[in-house]
Image (cartoon, rainbow, N blue to C red; front, side):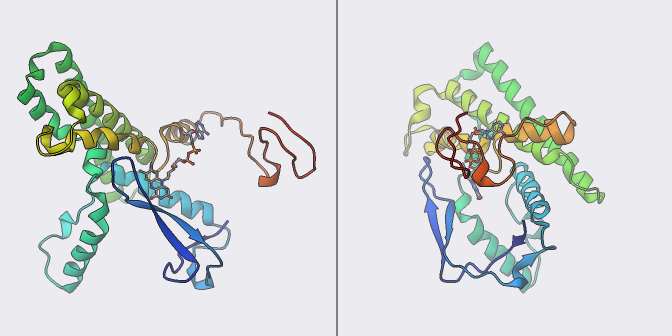
Length: 257
Ligand SMILES: Cc1cc2nc3c(=O)[nH]c(=O)nc-3n(C[C@H](O)[C@H](O)[C@H](O)COP(=O)(O)OP(=O)(O)OC[C@H]3O[C@@H](n4cnc5c(N)ncnc54)[C@H](O)[C@@H]3O)c2cc1C
């Protein structure tokens, strides 16, 4: 398996937006029909594609615990920095819902005080649990940053952080629902926080799937971090020989699981 960065501006590459249930369309499906790949497009050595893909995904997962902004470059002078800021603004435009996907823990206390939910002992417990989880996840992110700064290779923080972000988002959606009740579903000007709470509810499910599902993160943590035995696999070898429910295999025989 080899890894290529190809020219997307060519006939044969078709990018189709995927509409999400929160009304945004911030990612796509890409169809390649007779698209051309040049030898210069190869990243790394021939056959090292799996390693490149794993590195890409480890970086993608790490991005779940940090904001997409150009904070460290803001205010820097020079064309390169203004160009970069402009590029980031365009690239980040489809991601206005990302804070909602993370659960908007920052809005929980304000909502709890506005609605009086803060006086309910059971809800206070959940709010405290949520803040503890969110703070712990932040520290995992800080540990990863410190390790990267010290020049250490990427550790398990990517998968741990991704899984923690899922748990935080899921609990945040539950806490917001408990605080706002039926109003959590409303959108528009008269809704809680101009529809942001409703957007939280339809955006948080994404975080447990995008960039690798929770179950896959758990497998990675179990197998690669903790060194537990690998789960049994039924999909090894050529694709034509992968076991399926029924139907003929390459050998022309019916196989059933
Ligand atoms: C909001 C969002 C943004 C996305 N953005 C991108 C993007 O930018 N680029 C991109 O390439 N893709 C993107 N994706 C696709 C995403 O990476 C995949 O949907 C995801 O990795 C899950 O793969 P799948 O949909 O094939 O599910 P499947 O792999 O079919 O999984 C289905 C279910 O089975 C479970 N499962 C699968 N294998 C195992 C196992 N071995 N053990 C236990 N459980 C298992 C999964 O956890 C899941 O619950 C995005 C998806 C979403 C929702």
